[in-house]
Image: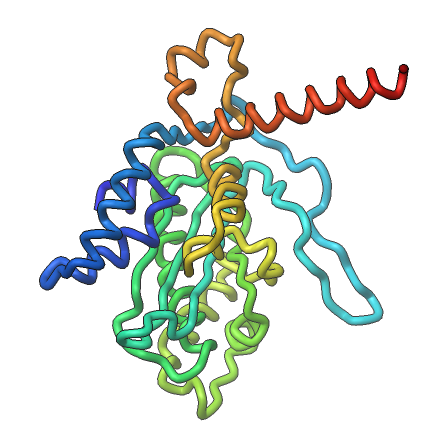
Length: 279
């Protein structure tokens, strides 16, 4: 549980599945656990790096389409505010057909809280799973807002919660209860109340830009590396020639070595191509 909730956001999905077999483990689960431990052995160091200064937003995050009447979230440049990415994978469990909820909460452009959990009941439609995930993420966001206020960092603006389901966003904003979602009336009413109080507001983002999408289902290594490296603030790591690089033991960070090796290969290829063109 320490790995899943405190130190390793890239293993939250795997640990969530392992926790479902604690009462009755079997051979396939032990094989998967052994594979996960091998991954931890070779990738033992995954530091979360927070910037020393306040990150300012460099350009707008929205692209407006006036003819279509909507705007799309484009850039992951989030500035220094509190931001929530919430997602759900509908009926992903093949054994129980229950959905998975996931939320990533970022502050000053780096993750500070995350959670991945299987929903307690099976839902018929994807909107129900998204509402449950949004309620869980919004509750954690309000808790962090109150905590930041108590230590002297109040948040005056509304906190955005990025969601890739437009139907769920419309239900929260309009507070319209249909026969399909009437059994979620309490959660929708609570989310709408937070929207009216300007504590939270749901914003649409594409699935390709959804940061939490990497932990709702098994994804390839490239997608997981891209999302997690952005969330943990890898772009704020010191350079190899900096003294803090050795103090933080970043030479043990396998993902960083992989990126540096790719950069070295690209630089060598560029030098070789330029030399060939000169000849």
